[in-house]
Length: 527
Image (cartoon, rainbow, N blue to C red; front, top):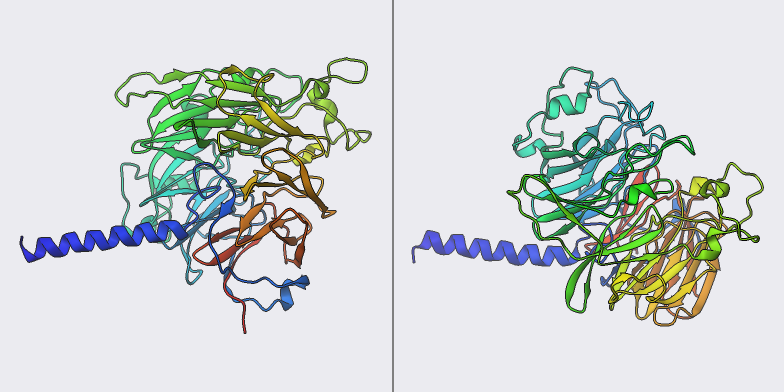
């Protein structure tokens, strides 16, 4: 064997070993792993202290901090030495673009905090039902999913983007080469690209390509299964309650070829005909009796389970796939009032001053379902702007078939308010928070309550479990840190500079704390 060939093989083996090691320490997608369980096995993480702590006086090693936009709902992900996070572009300026309040994706060096590249995503102003859908100016809400040299994300324009993790720094890779026009926006001349711009490999437009009509905002944390991507289209209702749904038969869950962006499959469940408001949950993967199964929470309040469909990349039409089973997460008592009359979804809207916190109207599923030991854990809720009311957390047997609403419930818990929180399950315990500000710990096997803590602050985020601690961020800028276990032990309450609408993550021994206007990377405690 020639020396050059030996060196090439050795280099490849070392690179593969390094990649495997790096992957273990990374957080490359929403939930870290395909099952979306918000748990990390990393140890010896930075100690954030005890008691009530002010961020300004904290003795932390702040490795770096990066300015975001005015809002941040997208969770950070970390892979291959890079941090990715979505926000809006309101606090960023670009002399090439006369626009604000679009989306912004940042790629950051995880060691230095240097912004390596950024992708400006124009705000969607084209008309769907009289106007563009993003009047909330929330920017890019989805977390990036990273695999190797590719990053996948759902943009604030209702499209799936495949990106080069190196941006334009290593040239403009194809087949998509129209980034200059993309960044400028539909009605503006193309901008001149530079190394600090993002590099789009391919783009799939879900609004025109399906077609599809998102409501309020698009959100999906993409799931990779083999050579395919599973994506929620964010199809929704008309902006005016009572008006016909614009695209009732549009698919809600689609499957794309990860190499080309070609549409390979779409669900045939007609979720759009029953959607209350919008579809904003993300798909997850679980092993059930040793076989892969896809789980998805619908905007109709139904949890769906799918066997991965057989797809043909050469087929002219996408495969239509049906659910293996479904479970209606809205109990009958939430559908009717005390007199047995059906409750309209919009009766629970925050615009009604007389809506009580114990209101039991119907809900959609915004949280991501988590499969754990042949069971699926998921809670119901709504967009928090529509008020605090009663929710429900379920533990569901994932081995059943058909409509399993009456047969698959292992336990349920109704002492939880509406929530968008994805559960974290560790050491036989389930941790979840709700919009009313409660953090709940339950026995995963039985649903028995171990403890509840009232933060007195609204919570949009999920719980993170890492290094024997539970982390929860709130809308009032507080980061709560609990010790894991069946007995409640609040370790610290940390006042952050800005509110938190998304969830901390850990990667490479670092705690990443996303706030509305800045992302903080926290290292080991200073001596």
